[in-house]
Figure 1 (cartoon, rainbow, N blue to C red):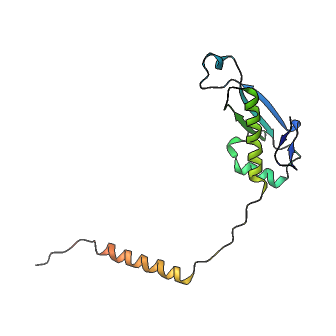
Figure 2: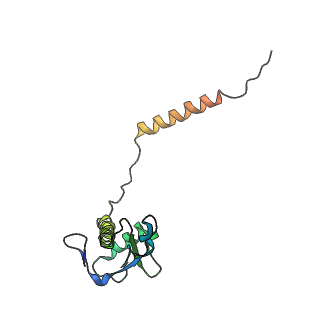
Figure 3: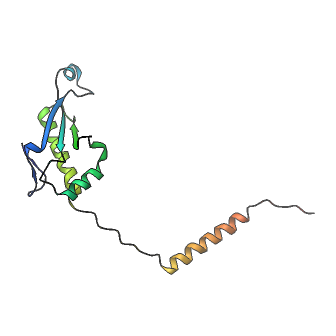
Length: 141
């Protein structure tokens, strides 16, 4: 089933692979029999749906999810139902891609105002004088 990221971007079935594995945690006797955890491997290097700049931002945004062969690994074990976990993993992948679609605004350098520099230096001077006053006192009598 294709994963819809936005109305214009849809990830085809060929760009990802799904594996079902046994989930840890609660579930009683059922947890040892049923493979309900979903591991979705998105082939980031070979997908043609995303632009190169989006791929770069996706790599930078989640380096812990990348494998050595250039796959983005998304897993879900939120519920005990395989289908719901599959839908959840697809939603997670779509949310990750959506978060990096818009390039970040470049930072514009700003300078502090003269007044703020004067106040900061005045505060530093008064703090230094206050600390200097806490020094050892000589008792010359």
